[in-house]
Length: 167
Ligand code: TQI
Ligand code: ZN
Ligand code: ZN
Image: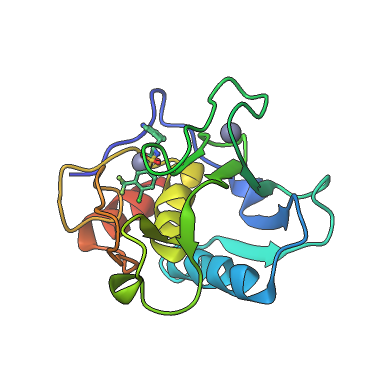
């Protein structure tokens, strides 16, 4: 079953058309992965997500960082913590730049044992960004474990019920 953060924070009604920006110059493939990940959540809510060139002005700020990057939640190198996102309305979504991210192609056939599917992690972290905590339903995107070399990008019914409670 879905959960929320303490106090059930959410993006308020007047902030449901959100922009997102990237800290670094990223490839079109990475941007396309995020566009697909956001679309999965906008399809089941009134929320919209629009890319912007201004990281500074964006509601949602996405970046790849390594080690200590100034928010008190340092990344730890290959595997372990892969990414984190803060609860509404913080908007920061950070990915561990040390991971072997699979952006295009099939993570299940990657030669790297530590390969991690970017889209799967992006969908999960966007859930946090919008206010979902972890779910006890193992079919949910918000279930708190994913194996390396696994792809899991489709929202489960539990994710949809949780996000539709918030929005
Ligand atoms: N990162 C944790 C996560 O996103 C960070 C975290 C732990 C967290 N507890 C939290 C974030 C509570 C918000 C609220 O869950 S992670 C998965 C999963 C991670 C884990 O790197 O461990 C995914 C990132 F669920 F599969 F295990 C992405 Cl998909
Ligand atoms: Zn961070
Ligand atoms: Zn999580």
